[in-house]
Image (cartoon, rainbow over all chains, first blue to last red; front, side):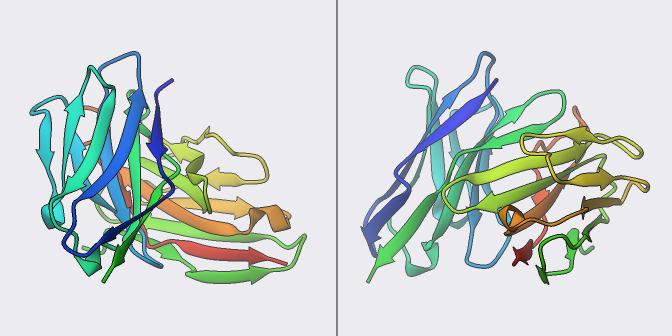
Length: 113
Length: 115
């Protein structure tokens, strides 16, 4: 079964600094991977997805992620953090056939003014 | 186009009471899902449906039942609520395999407290 692991349940960065949120996957087949964002008291919104095309994926709000098969990683980055980026971020892997998503435990991002 | 909607947004139950959460989608999606979100545990799949009239168990199905009588609706029932079911519940939907875009579309959530 496919799974993802998010390292760091809480990450704090200064406004304007690089954001790096880590996600490693485990899969016996080429994975489809996703990053979702959840703002306070809201549902989940798709940031970006990897579906076996380009390994560098660009998403909304200036975020991007790079699929690295050799490292089984799909880390999320943003060059310059904004206060509006404060939220919880979830990495997920798709299970083919029933289209089930398996989520990581989430990383809460705090932006320091 | 409302996307995925959930009713109610908030609910407080006493232990032993029952209730039904309603999820509706207007995107003609085939697959629908119910998740619960608890601090530090991410989202865990309760039940899902791959089409009208079908349901299947997810990762944490105990204490819940579901029904998909109409394609656009997916109901989650708690027959006898327990404090351990205090959580935020999310519904999601997606087109069937092969139709892309493989992402799930989420509702705004229902915050349930069982006292």
